[in-house]
Every structure is written in C-alpha cells, then in structure tokens.
Amino acid sequence: MTINPRKRIDELDSLRGIAALVVVLYHYTFRFEEKFGFTQITDHFNLPYGHYGVELFFVISGFVIFMSIEKINNPFKFLYKRFIRLYPTFWIGMIFSYIFITFFGPENLKVTPTEFLINFTMIPSFFNVSSVDGVYWTLKVEMFFYFIIFFDILFSVKKKYQIVGYLYIFLGILSFTLLRPTNYFFYGSLFLIGINFYKIWKDNASIHNHIQILLCLALTLFYSNFEFFYVTLTLLAIFYLLVYNKLFFLKIRPLLFLGNISYSLYLVHQNFGHTIQIELIHAGLENYILLLTIPLILSIIIASMITYFLEKPIISYLNTKHPWRFISIKK
Image (cartoon, rainbow, N blue to C red):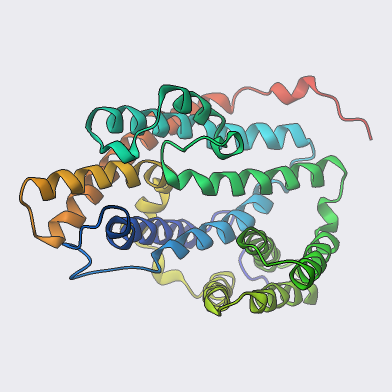
C-alpha cells in the first residue's frame, strides 16, 4: 500500500504553525511571568507546557531533512543548503531584535555590541556569551544534528541509517545507565523519530522503523519524571496520524500561513513581544487578551515581512549558486 505519494505535506506545514503558536503563547504567558513577575496574563490564561512545541519542531526537522537529502550525495551541497536556510534569516531576525531591544527593551534583555557580534555565529553559548534572544538555544541542537547528517553523507552511511539509529539508541541506554540523563540526548531521539516516520511515509519502511520509534519512546523512561514519556507518546500519535493521512483537517489557511512564517516568527517573537507587553502594562493596560494578542499580531507582521520580503528572495537567489561544485569528493 502506498501511504502518501505527494511530494509536499501540507499538514506538516500546519504542524509547524501549531508548534510556533504554542511556543509563542508559552513565552507570552508562563515565561513572561517567570522572567518579569507580571501576572496580569497568567491570572487568566497560562500555557506552562507550551515549550514542548520545540520538541515538535525537532521531530519535524528529522522528517524533512531526510526528505531533502534523498537526492543529495555531496555533503558540502547539504551544508550549503542548510546554511542558506538558517543563517540569512537568523541574521536578519537577530539584527532586528538587537536594535529593537537596545532602544526600547528592558536592561535585562540587552547584550553588549561584542556579544551581538559573536551572536552572528549562531552558537554564542560556545563562547560563553549571552544570546541576543534566548530562543536561539534550539539552533545549536539543529546544527549538531545537521553535522551528523553531513558525516553520514560524507562517509556514505546515509542508506545505513537504521544501523546508526540502533547505535544511537544503544549509546543512550549505555549513557543513561552510567551517567545522568541529559535533555540533549532526548532531543536527538526526536530527530531519529522524525527520520523513521519519514521512511514510513515514503512506503519503504520496515519493521525496524517502528521498533526504533518505540525504543526512542522507551528511552524517555530513564528520566526522573514521566513528562518526556507523555510528550513523546503524544508526538508519536500525531505523526502516526500524519503518515497514514489522518490529519487532513489541519490543512487550513491560518495554520499553513503560520507554518510558512514559523522560522522568522520563532526568531523574533520573544524579546520583542516581552518588550511590547511590558510597555503596555506600564501604560496601564490590564486586559489579558490584548496583552497577548497585540504582541502576537505585531510579531506575526514582522515575521511575515522578513519571510516574504527578505527570506524567500534571499534563499531563491542563493539557490542559484553552487559553491560545492568546487569541492570534489573522492570515494
């Protein structure tokens, strides 16, 4: 049976939109109170578990990466494609956030000019430097995953992903037995889950894909609480529905739109939105709905402008360049 012959999955874009929205609402409710002490919103509406939208992003990343590298045999082409997808938009969002916070933001959100320059690497924590915006931590996880895929392509083990997957799971069991479990290993298992779901969707799956998905779920039991287990179980349910074409009801324009601007929205929403919220409260606004919707709408406008007027044209232009051609790969 062919599960899904389509080349593009609209429902996946909708899931991106949902993930972005719940992360934004988490930051504008629970995280806002946690960072600044204001309870005007959380007294009425709170989303303390909205940060798990990031975990949904990681599973989606694992899924789409294997979709994108099917016809890529040059690892440097892969790195270039990932570079133009991540860095130009990141730089634009970071510059916007830095300028806005420097002039209008609270002191505890500001960074120095030196820290700002180091942020251009996308991995300021490696240099023990504060991020322009705290949400950038997830990009470090993404980059680490991309480098694993780079070496998979470089050493021609892409087609042996199942072996690599089992090795990762074995190392997880070993490390959890000997060491304290870390969240970063959990994030890696989410990428592996996404890869296996892609193979199921492509209809070239084996029983090993389902086994690895369930083993990744079992790994979460090594943690001190069951939150990761329930989150992963929820993600598995969502993606099993996805690959068997049961999420068609998600193909609605608002979610597809949010999915389209999700990267830019993720990059600019937090510190920008917090600053707007603080200024509105200082101006005497107490309506929690407006304290949520005003920064949300403004963030969506900014993200839309970045996506359609900068991100897409820049990526379209850079896609016409092929610098990897000058790097030969001898096998």
